[in-house]
Image 1 (cartoon, each protein chain N blue to C red):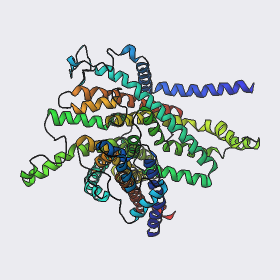
Image 2 (cartoon, helix red, strand yellow; image 1 turned 180 degrees about the vertical axis):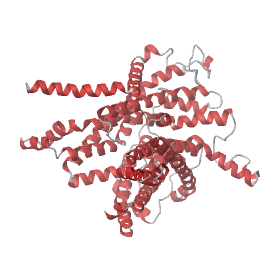
Image 3 (spheres, rainbow over the protein chains, first blue to last red; image 1 turned 45 degrees about the horizontal axis):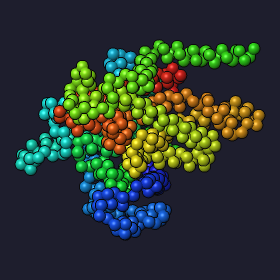
Image 4 (cartoon, helix red, strand yellow; image 1 turned 90 degrees about the horizontal axis):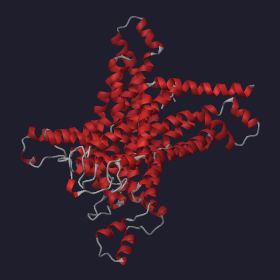
Length: 324
Length: 289
């Protein structure tokens, strides 16, 4: 098991290098320099000042030299300083926003699996029933609804018309004066819409996937055997079939992370949540290279870690994988 | 004699496909909707009741009425006409982006599957890397650096969504290249290029076709999300995403701006998904895409 783990960790390294190289070159090759934006903000900037800035940020050096300089700093866990006017270290900027994004995404992930797995299993067990047909139809609808549009609709319904839930930010205006219970409810109510919507995006795919896995497993000989030896249907489904059908779903856990992280750009924008997605959007608009690179790298690390955790989970549950 | 029997064989395969497809009512429904969307996009100037960019300060933020069935936006523009013209954008983006992704995916997948060894290792590593970068982040970074606009969006969506096709094509090539007809072609002295594109690829096209139709749905969603964030199709050109941006800004007073363009996106994506799944089930229900 430990050798397997080490092997997986080592395999991550070249991929991570590849990701940083591709991201770095794409960002630097694109037209539009950070100094242009700074010049737009400050029309009094002279060409000389611009030159000085370019030199200061090493933007005049060839790309591969810039990449190596960046890599050398990152090896010491230093992502450099932001180009924006506050000039704060990139890592500090990301750190203060990382936790809320991870919190929302983990809650969404739990919600996805808690809802999608029972739906998938039950519609497979009752294949072609009315229930199965309805869930299949709902899955198609779920695939087709743009989640940012659903966000707008829910904001209109719960925020504007019913006034049940707040539509923006993480805290209400009078947060400091609330009682402890009030504070808890305030935070929870701010999270309900974003988490539900993040989860909605992954729900359809995973319940569909669970259904087809379950259908495949139910047709296997060992399920017939289990039935033939007189086990109750409950035991056959939940003990023999479900465990085997769950295996491939673990892999999806890792694969759904990039999508979730990508989705946070949209949701944090709509709901005004100060997370990593919002920071990324702002940095892209400002051509803040160090922050963009920092977030892309951390996003990639999170994705690779998610994939590895999924593989480990897979290996723990299926001894055949470890043997390879 | 042999030629005619071959022809009837080909026709019967098509016949089987059509018979299965016509039985699938949802797929036919999807196909009809796609056809209607095409018609609306092409005939937009004749169908739209108003010009899409006609500003009318006397009728700002009006709720749906007989004159403006979908209401008007903050500049008094007719939402129905803007939604009709918006269909042109999503149609164009869907087809061009998926075209780019499919061509790139076929080339990478074919090289990888046909040549194997280090070519395969390098290309598949590259695919893994591309898949590990949150796609939406990458698209956002590239689009915002370029001038946002419809052509750049098509190219960027295309270049960030070819990986699935590459994997499909590679898998098909891995099994097809061992078949006798490939061996026969090679024995006859056919070049690699000819074997890849004339002999193997036509046999690997059905999963590619299905994933392309499903891919259009994905591209339409991404384009609308980008336009919604303000880095896609730029106003005054109407796209479903950028109408929704105006909807968000006026969310407390004008629900109609947020509702109708979303329904258009929803119907379009649903139609392509139904059509794609229908084609897959009619070609081979066991295909896994």
